[in-house]
Amino acid sequence: MEIIYTIWLRSMKRFVRSKSRIFGSIAMPLFLLLFLGLGLNSVVNASSLGQEYVMFLVPGMVAMSVLFSSIFSGLQIIWDKQFGFLKETLVAPVSRLEIMLGQTAGGATTSVLQGLILTVFSVLIGLRIQNPVGFFIALAFMILVGIGFTAFGIAIASRMEDMTGFQLIMNFVIFPIFGLSGALFPISSLPAWLVPVTLMDPLTYGVEGIRFGLTGVSQINPVVCAAVAAGFAVAMTVIGAFLFRKISV
Image (tube, rainbow, N blue to C red; front, top):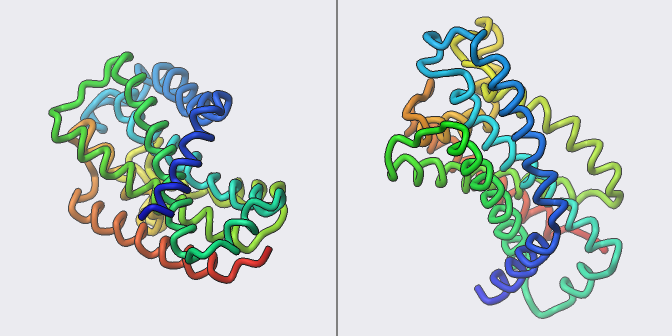
């Protein structure tokens, strides 16, 4: 645990010192929330959503913030490779599993913090969290999404050497994951052929879980959401640990 904590603490210090990273990770979700949400709020039929569109959009934007931040945590692996820090870490008398878990914990924590920052902004524009329990339910789903996609990013980064290539691949992967998650539109409004594709997206269950916690409304059973999100987080952690053990520097 001391090794995991040390690597986690390093990630947290880098996060606190990088103000541009904090701003950049919440700027796009906040922009979409304010301009897309408020702009379409009077256009979209609120009765079909069970709430105003801008409030429907909040959980999706929170999930977007967590997703983007967590999945790009893999960049730190490539950065450490290029500057020799990872090599020094790997030759230390600690297991690679502990190093990977520390990196995952650090990336997930920073992504959840950014999700919480966006949640605070959402409260300022009118979000009413149903009860304190709902907030902690949403927080739990943020943590699961953060762990799952941080481990996913580390798994991909473990097999790559170039930061530019990693960013291109992640952009190719991340936007379909987000676009098909139901963050921007209700699943019930989709064409029948697209619903199974949306249900295959692990982020869908994170979005619906956060939505249930923050607004009390969900189109998927929250228990199912929790099971899938937790299963994805565990699976990605196992895969990420396996690939990280084979990393070469």
